Length: 115
Image (cartoon, rainbow, N blue to C red; front, side):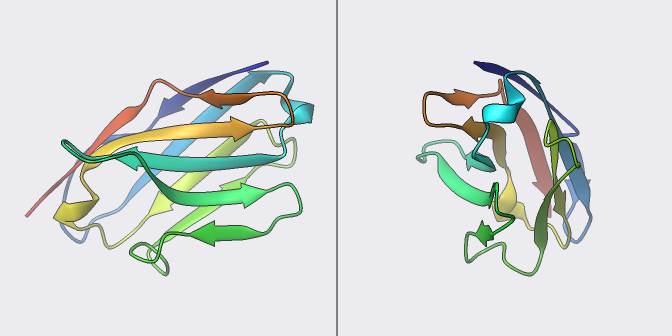
């Protein structure tokens, strides 16, 4: 299993930037994909960005070109660089790690974008 801890959320004005970090501990060598999801009030949790172990990244259409997911060489930390933030990006952001035998979530970090 792995444990995940997010950091970097906060309040930012529209057009601003934030960088989220996710620190993983435990069996990080088993991680096959790492990602970021978000959940806004009254809405379902949705994929924001995901990075597979082969470095293939995928993004939700609404964030493509504004957000970027990356990881360190050890693949025990990953990041979400968020630029040109919009009020509709306001949500709790969760990092996620998947392997063949676990699907683990962090506790979430709030991102609020004011107009």
